[in-house]
Image (cartoon, rainbow, N blue to C red):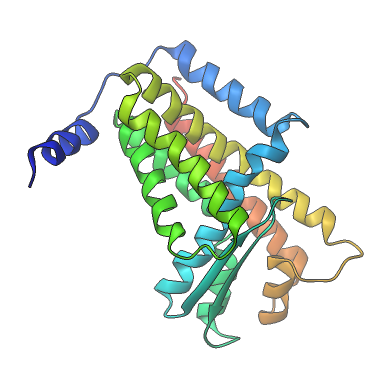
Length: 235
């Protein structure tokens, strides 16, 4: 293995001391402001959409479906298409994976930070972006992935260690705090509209109605937030 890769791997996997409590709570507060502020959320929601569509794509591949493409739109919506049986466990799991994906990524980040590995959080997110580039099928989606990816790469490569740690905490808190909000938005938007949400599609494929799936999504994202909070909070 080349020496620079060995050094990179050592830097990623070597634990560092936890930051001051003020940094942990400060990044949590900053992430909460981003999620709740009307002027910030529409922009930050693109990251949640990236994870949502990435979740669909990963599970589609793991269940044997053929992933044909991912699109990200300027209104923060997205679309992941795959080929395979229109019914069955694979399709159900693929539809189920979208909304909890940010929570799963956030919990993974919380575990890494709990073990003093902030660079694992940042490089893992960069790896997700790189994999999604292979399946992005529209220009706006490509632009979103590149902007996010270049920003995290710059922090990884040139950022000071303390800023990398702050970035990892901010990103992890954001994923955990942001995950429930798209579920609530989906529950509001599906009223009186075409029933095309993940919950509605799952309702047609299973014996659980769409409202039941909304509750499942809220339970998963809310429970993940509590779990992540217990890992991150200096209590």
